[in-house]
Image 1 (tube, one colour):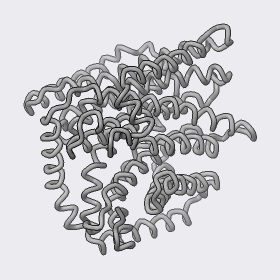
Image 2 (image 1 turned 180 degrees about the vertical axis):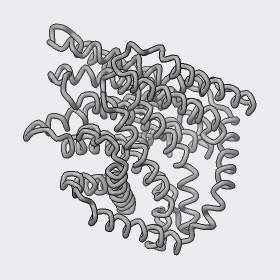
Image 3 (image 1 turned 120 degrees about the vertical axis):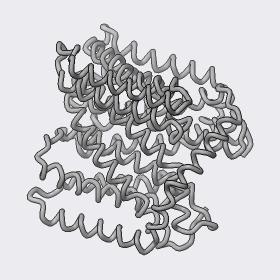
Length: 472
């Protein structure tokens, strides 16, 4: 691919990084300022906007900055992780934020923030450049969130019950899209592309995932928000617009920052070492996950879903079933892969039914419909990331086991980092009291994503084996 073939987004991010970033930042800032203007009758958005920026910056941004500054030596990293865990425990025990409106939510957020920092700092070699640079897409997503808040105010929806869930989802999706851009850049650079070409390709490749994120956000809130007739269209449009602002901001800013960053051969060496290490850990799973074993695992999951669905006291709503179908169809259309659509559809079906059963068995607090919409939309996008990595890994030279290994080598770190950052963002908005039930939505998303990560490799192998001929 030539530099001229990078596309509109890739070319702007790679060849005009400063200009594209400044223009985007100016537009997003203007939208946020206009939304908070008293003349627009939307001054109610100012305090929630400040709370979002401060809470997300402290609870999500601080761990990512610590990871960027983490020492290279293993002993020093372990010491830093221990210090972070001790500080988080002390903050919860001392409870210096008892005056907050939601002390329990703040304690949960401190746990989530500490866990994010400990995992990323400890596993820097496993996550590579993705963990060290993840603060860049978060900063861009925060700028997009500010603009999204302003857009809500302009539309007179600053006090909408769906505002907190939409803002939390948009922030999580922006961070996930930016992390995907970082991961694609690392892959392109390791394969021999120069810095700017790698950044441009990474930005352009993320356009499809942005489109999927925007549409799935609108679909989730349109189908599951519980708004009255007519109101669901308004909420769907606002959720889609919020996702558009944060994801585009993260995509462009991340690509621009990567094109400006001086990358040396050390990055390629670290990435190759990471891949080699991952393959060594993956080897036992590869041996166990034969096509026959994968088919059996998928069949067991399908039977379990049918058994649970038939024995549930309260059936799953038609709207939820329709959303699962829409998520699979959108994945197939937007990602240009029928098997990607099947992957997302089946993963969502199994995970949603399992979570509904678990939630009712343990008596966990039920999220509102808007909260559930945010958790499901975030899950669908990360399943889409898995499907996209699987699509890119397919080759006529690889058998089903090798295809799954190649896909998970790229997807595992991206999936885990995106999930951790996104769930911590949910907790952050819950602590800020912008999204009161954000912690419950984060817990639901965590279970959904864990099921998807466990089921994903078997489903990839089974679907690859069913076709028996991989398409490049």
